[in-house]
Length: 238
Ligand code: APR
Image (cartoon, rainbow, N blue to C red; front, side, top):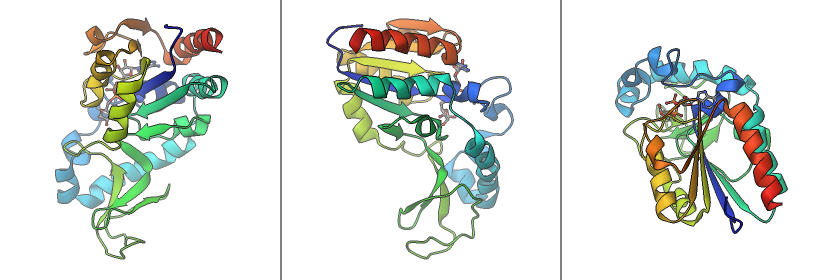
């Protein structure tokens, strides 16, 4: 890790929340082995069966509301608190709010958030942990039937990409935690960071699809490996 490091970017995926008890997507018992993506996570599914899609995300909300951050989330929040001279950004693919619950800031949810709804008519985003339905009325434009979970479906453009692009081009250290590296554009973020001079680390339980793009690999459960690594970062840069 270079002494001149001033900007650290984390990219997190479902694996960082696994030790908080939340399902990942592509493991044997993952979400996409229990539900078809084509039924609940595409804009075509939402147009075909909006209430069914709402029910899928309604069923996820109570578990994600109750979930608590684990040592991995807490270690990133600790790093942000300890390294006050550094810019430390979190790009997350996760729709849970565990980084927020851990006390982190500078969080960019590129796939949306489970506790948000968006109106397809006016674009208004509202926050809720309650159930949502296809007959809901938008609190902003007062039209009915345009409310969608603020989750980025396959085929939609991820959020915050303009900000993310700048983060990737200005960071000195890029740290990927708990993502399988199969969904773009997130899976290609490491290449941009590396092209612009960042040192890159991958934290995972196993070799991933884009493993070859990273300079360093730290295998193991993020709840153990990341706090140890972050202790070293704090000791080096404090
Ligand atoms: N510590 C570290 N890594 C872990 C842990 C853990 N405790 N548990 C699981 N992992 C790793 C797995 O090895 C896997 O590589 O986390 C990764 C989870 O991969 P996915 O289930 O594919 O989740 P993710 O990469 O976040 O998916 C990306 O795909 O379906 C879309 O929008 C969805 O944001 C999601 C995107």
